[in-house]
Structures are given as structure tokens and as C-alpha cells.
Image 1 (tube, rainbow, N blue to C red):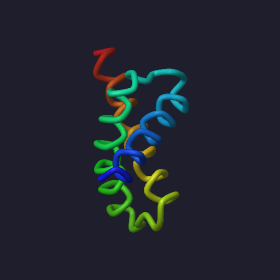
Image 2 (cartoon, rainbow, N blue to C red):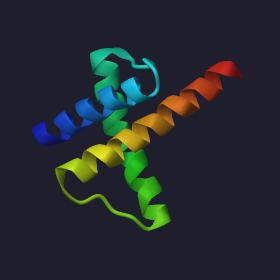
Image 3 (tube, rainbow, N blue to C red):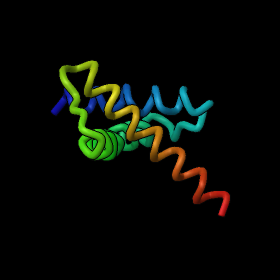
Length: 78
């Protein structure tokens, strides 16, 4: 459980940094990273990839969080 939260926190922080500061604070980034882990895992499974190890989980969760930030930006502009 603690490892999952650490992955979520790191992924949310990385996604906020990659998307030029569109983070949502510490708690928001944690939630974004955790939800992003599910989104990223689903997205990668569709394409035929799977996360392996701690680094793979962080990359997967970060990818999902980036997707969520992008969708948030698109929805905000509409």
C-alpha cells in the first residue's frame, strides 16, 4: 500500500513537471498519480505492453497522469 502511494506521488509530481506546472498540489498529484496508474496500465495493455518493476510502474502511472492532465486541459478549454 505504501509503495503504491509512493508510485502515485512520484507519478503525479512527474506528470505535473512534464506538463509545465499543471500540477494539483500534493494531495491532487497523489490522487492523479494513483488514478493515472490505472489509466496508464489500461492504455499500455491496449497497445500490448506491461509495466515491469518499480520503474515500469512509475512510467506507466506517469503516462496515465499525463493523459489525465491533457484531458483536463481540453475539457477546461471547452
